[in-house]
Length: 336
Image (tube, rainbow, N blue to C red):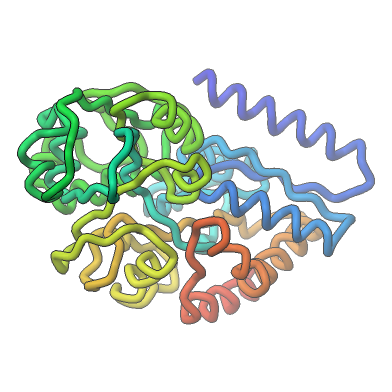
C-alpha cells in the first residue's frame, strides 16, 4: 500500500512539473527489467523531438499494470503479459507492444572461480526452496566437475516488490520443477520459503554484490552492470547455455510465432542454443489518450521498432525478431 501511495505521489508531482513547462510530457510506470534500455530510448527520442518528454518510473511490473489499467499513468510497462481478467477490468482498452527480449539470470557472489557455474532447473528450484543449503552440495558439484566449491552456506536474494522478473523466474521454475509448481508456483509475487528481499532488479544485484556466498535472480543487464558472475542454465535440449543476445534470440526463434495479442511465454523453449529463462517485455499502451499524447506514443513506437532496436544489444538485451516488428508496426497504425 505504501508503494502505491508513493507511486501516485510521484506521478502527480511529475504531472505538475510537466504542466509548468512548454513541453508535452507523458508519464509511464512499470518494470525495472527493461528500465536501463527504456531510459536510453527516451533520452535519444527526446533529442529528436525536443518538445516531447517521456518520464518513466521503474517501480515494478505489478505497480505498472495497476497504474495503467486504472488510468493513473499514460503508459505502463511489464514483463508479464496481461491476463484476460486484467484486460477486461482495465478502465480503457490496453494494447501490448513487445519492446525487446531479455533474460533473468542466476547471479552469484562466490569469490574466485575459474569458470561460470552450471545450474539445472531442479538445482535452482532446490536452492530457492531452501533444500540445497551449501555451495558444495553434491547436486551442485555433480554438474560442475573440477570446480572447487566452498562449504559456505548459500544466501538467497529475491525480490521484495511485485515483479515481472519474479514472474519470469517462477514461470521457468514451475515448468521444470513439479515440486516448485506445487509448493510456490508462478506469479509476480510469491511466498518465498527462504531468503532476503531487495527492491527492484538493481536492489537485488547490489545486494548480491555486497553479500558473500549469495545467489539471486536479476535481469542480465543489471548483472553485467554490477559485474556479477552469472551461471549457465541447462536448457530443454540438455545444453548448458549462458545468457547472451544470441542465446536469448535463439529462445524466441525456437517458439511458435507471436499471436496478434502479443502475449506469449518463451521460458524453457526447445531450441538447442536457447537460454531457458528468456522473456519478451511489453509496453502497455491505452488505446484512448488525448490526441497529442497518442500521437507522441505512436511516433515513439515506430521509432522504437526501427532505430531504437540498435540500442538493445549494447545494454545487454536482444533485438525483437523481424516478424514481431512487422506485426507491431501494423498494430501501431490501428491505434486511433
